[in-house]
Image (cartoon, rainbow, N blue to C red):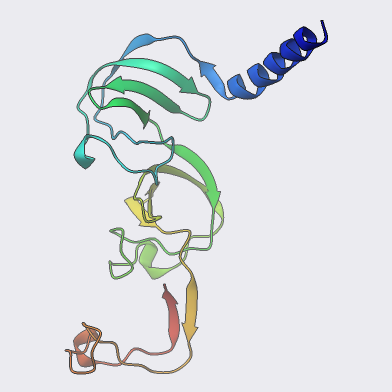
Length: 179
């Protein structure tokens, strides 16, 4: 009797914790009318599936839907996570870039974005997130650190003092650098 009561209690607790985030768990078929990326985990920083290529518009077998917009679907590679509308996140005080690289052109007229809500639509495994802005889709790296160099420096295109100087040979003035 005691073991049965414990078993029922454990089942009840496990059920609550497991199904708390799932809003739809039945298998169903839905038509997706846009191209989309698949991810191995429900995160834009997870590895992409399908060789990193987008899936075309198609009917998908939905295994699970979460209230944060992530769907688990069945593909030829097995279960894959997709997010068709992106995630809203409050972020701020960061630079945005045209490409997922600190050497890319700085967006937003070279100024930082202040604290606000952004719609994240894609990402990379090394921390970059693509988001929607007034300029179109841009990239940010919220995990990057900013360091301040308080003196004029030269940068090089290779890790050698014999390499060609970056910035067309001109020195960089004191500034913050993303690392």
